[in-house]
Image (cartoon, rainbow, N blue to C red; front, side, top):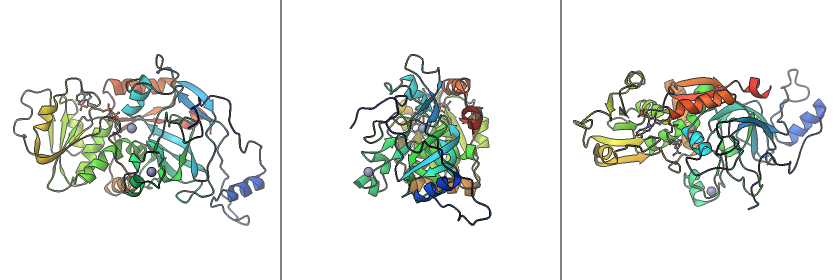
Amino acid sequence: MAPAVSPNAAPLACEGSLPLTPHQARDAHRDEGELMTDLADPQPQPIMSSPDQFQSFQSPGASNWLEFEKNSWQPRPFGEKDIDIKIDCCGVCASDKHTISGDWGGCPYPLAVGHEVVGKVVRVGSKVTTAKVGDRVGAGAQVYSCQDCRQCKNDNETYCKDQIDAYGAPYLDTGYITQGGYSSHTRVDEYWVYPIPEALSSTQAAPMLCAGITVYSPLKRLGAGPGKKVGIVGIGGLGHYGLLFAKALGAEVWAISRSRAKEEDAKKMGVDGFLATGEENWTEGHKMTFDIIINTATSFDGFALSEYLSLLDIHGHWNSVGLPGGEGLTRREMLEMLELAADKGIKSWIEEIPISKEGLQKAMHNLETSKVRYRSCMVGYEEAFGA
Ligand SMILES: NC(=O)c1ccc[n+]([C@@H]2O[C@H](COP(=O)([O-])OP(=O)(O)OC[C@H]3O[C@@H](n4cnc5c(N)ncnc54)[C@H](OP(=O)(O)O)[C@@H]3O)[C@@H](O)[C@H]2O)c1
Ligand SMILES: [Zn+2]
Ligand SMILES: [Zn+2]
């Protein structure tokens, strides 16, 4: 694999930089397989395209990771299965913070994180079949998998050995490092781009693309549904979706939080019960009664694992997703989750924050202090990056 280069390095290749006439542009887009209206169409579609350079709020380095800088950078060469998305909003995941703050051992700087994006398709490659220019779509924590290996073919494509993360990862042998959703645009393999159902607003849908699917997938795989008692540990971004989706699947749902501060909110999310682990004898009356517990805790300070495990019935399942690498989602599950959310009217609890250096600092602070209720979603991309 070629050595990774900084996304701020000199362009390796620059395609499509000459201005085109509208007809040339239309023909060029035709060649790329877009569904364009015929020339005789009285209401031609607006021609969209992606710029040569994308812009991002990047974290500059380990010692000053909160000093987000707005930079332009050269995206990797456009491929025949690529989709360019002009981003409208992006949720803020605790993994974003872990990555740029060095909690997980560092990352290639400068780096824009963010892996819960929704926006508009502005360009598609000639072999793309899953979306067309103008569609509202989302992308999550993955941007590529080979689609040919055993895991890709047995519904476990996030375990593909060639799977590429949305940020901080070398993209195949291009020498480029992926940049996340605190950006004007993103370039994603079509397999990892999802249509967003009309019933879901963009900011409602965006945080589902990592936080939502990370809990939905194990809930489904472990059989959460009627007759099952499900516990969700940690009521943050992931945890609040754990409550909402477990409820939507028909299970009896208990929130397991450190204190009672979030009890009222959890009730509004429909929980059947609430356990506060800071209280003495908090497991009393619940030992060996849970079928499934999903742990979304973001830290293990003072985490008494044996207490949590004492809640499980024989053959019950403990699933810890609060650590990296525990994901098992598939494209199929992602589409299924979005449909369920649309059908059942599931409402994400989000706080919209205009994207800027200060806005991102606020989002990171709210994560660090567990203040966020329950997912920050960065908005105002046109104001920050231009139309
Ligand atoms: N496996 C994956 O694919 C995947 C995907 C996304 C995120 N993640 C990871 O999942 C974790 C949660 O992410 P998030 O975005 O939901 O974070 P978050 O919004 O900060 O929520 C985490 C929650 O964990 C609980 N918590 C924090 N410290 C704790 C401790 N010492 N003991 C017990 N509970 C504690 C808190 O809930 P209470 O206040 O209710 O106690 C907090 O709200 C992060 O570590 C993230 O990196 C993994
Ligand atoms: Zn995430
Ligand atoms: Zn594969």
